[in-house]
Length: 409
Image (cartoon, rainbow, N blue to C red; front, side):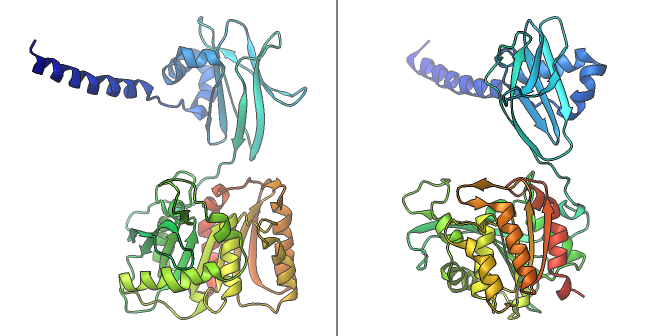
């Protein structure tokens, strides 16, 4: 073999081996819902599926767990019977793993009815632990039909941009996307909605996310909301942060009181979007909405609170109306200040956060009673869920329909 062919062989070998290694890492999660019944009805088939999914080494570790919707599957290889327990002192038994073959493979699957979170451990019959245990956190909702692509419904166009020269938030970098519905032709002024933490909410195919462009497509086609331009904007990364890093300016932008963020929208982002797409937007604040979750919800409320002459609608969930940068003052401010022309659709869950900054469910209850006391046009949706967007993803079509109902009669 010549030196040249030897080099070629080494080069090709270097390509093949990493590709093979990557292929070896691929695996298919077992279908937890189906395995719940399969474990009892056809143990051999269940053993085949589980073994192919995880492999012997992983199964012996005692760390194999898979959650699908509300069903949790645990699987191990052990030469003695094992059970899964909640990890609290004298934690209750969740279930006994069932033997599936003669090689020690055992599994157990069960379905939980409500949003639930707990730590667990797997123990042998003598009480010794198998593996380190872990956490189960379940909050699952089916999407509404309006959150799925519907045949025959025109789809809007989404375009991505970067904004790296802000004068209001100097030395920040961010991405944002603009949604323009298929029905917009410039003949009539359009409505506007701005979303904080925007890019993940604009993903039309996310599993558990808002899928906002899909919802917009369906509701606009059904005339349940007006023809609406969507601006989905991320918080700023600081200039010294690496691409993809968690935005370091998020809390300052979202949790702070005052008009700095809304000025950023009104003086920088929105004028650029209007110019770039030659848009005609409505001048009526009832046709302008702003949206966000967690600190993004506090930000949305602050923007409307500071400039109700621009943003007349708020869509928010798991609102951070606690003492991070002052948003805990809003229930009191709402009560003491002359009512502003803001229509609000808000959501929270009874298992939302409780930490050193405050209790999120309590803060949202205080916000709700303040809005009621001050005579605001609002509606609160309550669930049993945790801090996040899963419940909102399921409720978004209903909430948007209510929020825009006065403008589409």
